Each structure stands twice: as C-alpha cells, then as structure tokens.
Image 1 (cartoon, rainbow, N blue to C red):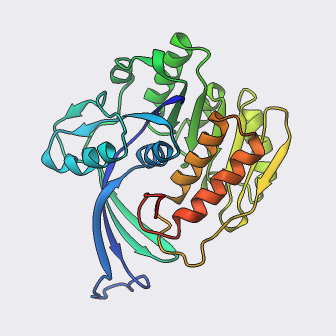
Image 2 (image 1 turned 180 degrees about the vertical axis):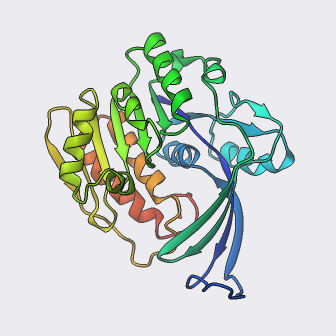
Length: 285
C-alpha cells in the first residue's frame, strides 16, 4: 500500500455541542463537550489510515503535556508522527461551537509554522504521495521546490481552502489541487465549472477538484474532462466538523488506488456524507 506523507497542522480542539447556536450575551448549557485532535492534514491522515494507507504526518508540535491528546490519537490510528519537530509553546487550540448544521470556530495559535528547513529533515524516499495544506505560503513554496528537486516523480496534492496571500504561486507544483467553495467565492466565482476552468489554467495542467456543499463536488481531470458527484447526506446530520478533510481523504485514496477520477470524487462525497452522521473520525461507527 502506498505510503503517504501529510504536511500541515495538528490542533487541540475543544468542541461544545449545542442544539442551536447561542445568541449574543446568552448563558446556555451545552449538550456535550469533547477535547480531541484536529487540523486539516491530521484529520485527512486519520481517515486515510482507516482506508488502508500507511500515513506519516509532519507539522510543528508543542513540547507540553497537552500534546498527548494529539499523539495518542495518531497512535490509535497508526499515524507516524516521529518526524514532527517539537518546540516550546502551546498547541494550536480551537474552541468550536457545534450545532447539527453549523460550526463556529475561534482559533488561537502560539506555535511557529513548519519551516522548509525542518521539512528538509524528512526522508522522502519511501513515500508514494505527499499532501500539503495550502498555508504558510513562503515556506510552502520552498518545501514544494525541495520535493520537486529530490523526487520529481512524486505526486503532490495541495488543499486550497483559504485565499492566503501568494497562494496562486503553489498551483504549478501540484498534480492535484483540492479547493473549497469558499476559496472559489473569494476569487469571484459562483459556479464550480467556471472556477475549475480558471484553476486548471492557473496551474501547470493539474487535476482540480472543488467541493460545493449540498451540491456535491466537481472536478476536471488531466484530459480536461469534467466530472461531478452529488452529495450523500446522512439521514441525520450530527457533526460536520472535518467533513472537508474526510472528503479530501476519500479523493486521495481513490486516486492513489487508481479507481479513476470520477470515482474519486464520488468516494469523497460518500465518505464526507457518512462522516456527517457521527461525531469524530472513526469510520467504523
């Protein structure tokens, strides 16, 4: 099975569950509370491991006891995090107010981002795929250039979630770009097809995918063919937190397993829908 390297953030999430979002100045009782590991790339790694892939994660971790929440969850799912640099500070922490149909996130970060110098300590020889969060653009560009210099044959996927300054510069390095509807809107697009055409033209012929909420997901493959899948919502929506990360894992797994581009988009939608039907990321639920 292909070994996958995922590069990004691992966070400490404090999740409050509500039936409906509290109004301003209200004092309400939550229906539930949990403290868990979060972060886009780390969530994607956990789902990929349950789909049968060997995964390693690299990102900066705080050298404090609270980081055990993150590392214990990685160990539970067989994620190798041994290459993560450990530095003084506190874990990036998110306070998340979760209702069945929305999640509001307040994030605090007290750690530096991963640097290209730290990334350079990773031995890339054993990996068959590398996936990056599209963040920390100046350092990300150096990491991408390093991968291309050392392993020009290594497929690279990049998640493009937010309109960060200079993010367009990373497009040319990707084999696969997975974008968010929010990013498309930030560039003035209100339809997936026109956005994907723009994104593909802005890259070096990468395959491109965008998740479009209740309308499913759309993509253009390496031959310029458009594919799409409907959404697969559960009977009852329980937890939408990390649905996008789960979608990414479904797409990546199918692509790595040579299931075909259209099937990859459908698998991403099916897995994301399934994940919305339960709390957390344990697919066996």
